[in-house]
Length: 348
Length: 197
Image (tube, rainbow over all chains, first blue to last red; front, side, top):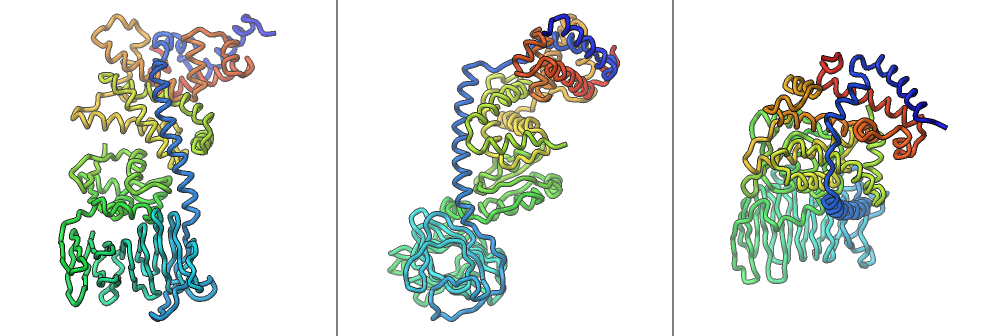
């Protein structure tokens, strides 16, 4: 049985051992210093309980979100891309088995229910597949998907849409909305053409969306140029413009900001950015492209610092704008609230 | 140096186990509260919001924690950003907090004198006291608690062992390690303290 006397003896031994290691800052001085400083302040019980409840609620949401995103992520594919294959317009809408032909792209991401037409004309659930032949897909009210072609083109299909795609890259949008990001891969004479029941949109630039409804269609351009053709009329749509053509061929032109809410749906199927080992500047470039916001640094010096700041970790499962606070929180960079459509990053 | 246990905690936290959440909260909330308090001395009312937001952001970013610093240090960085953002929004400069530079040393050393003798420096002394308390917070949580229990609250080793649910021998050993860690951390702030005044 240990007595207080024994403990004091042990403390004496400890004190001597500490003295050897710690020089003059021995136990007595530590004790005196701590007594002078006093106990550490504690948050009040009410405040603690309130904040614990609030944080726990956020934690529960985050856990649920991450679990849902992990399930969705399992549907994401990362096939190696091979050479493309050109098929005729008369080809049946099929997804081939892996051994048949080289892939011209992949179904890179599927969110919720998305279907494709099989060889028997039946609608079947679309999953992780390489694109080897033409394909026709349709999405439900909560569905969306992203196709990635070998030439770097990124095609996202929104909810309640039906899209046919030929192996050569030509698209027919029967209804709904698609977003095309050609990632600066288009060469002259290699443009992408989107056919709709009302007319055609030809991509001359980089980022745009085509939406088809029963009473007409529209093209809006985030970056670059798109040429619309409708009943022999041709119209060029510039970046920042939205052109709506209804069934009577009435044309309405309006402005649409590159970060307008009408682009928001594409974030759910944005390509993942791997931040591990990437520079902050590279991340910002991706963020700008995905959100349509102009992201700048407050000075050339800060920009240079961002170039040399290497990120670690993961933003897997986060929407692009959600990822910004996560990334910056682990750095000494911070966001300055700025005018709409523009984000300015400074450094402490 | 790795922080495997912190990384494991971060991973386990996001599995949805409420016991892990409670452990995480109880371990980090009071320490972050004091961290913010040191830096928000003139806006104590905002401390709770700052710490709550820090924990919100920390949890959302938990998947990106890689164990390259301790989890507390990582959370402190997020908290520091929140504090800076708070003052920036108010267009006010961030209060100067004594750091490990020449300015802190004489203040820290003055803690060993009679604090009441120099009323003009009470604010600085208060801040520095908080900084030393922060040193306790930066130690492994059991170290900081054991030192406080032993030397401030006057608990016996037996009582400390009981609180930590370890043997008295283990408690003594832990106290010894805690003193060493505290001394090393303090000496980083003020080398003069190691050789006495």
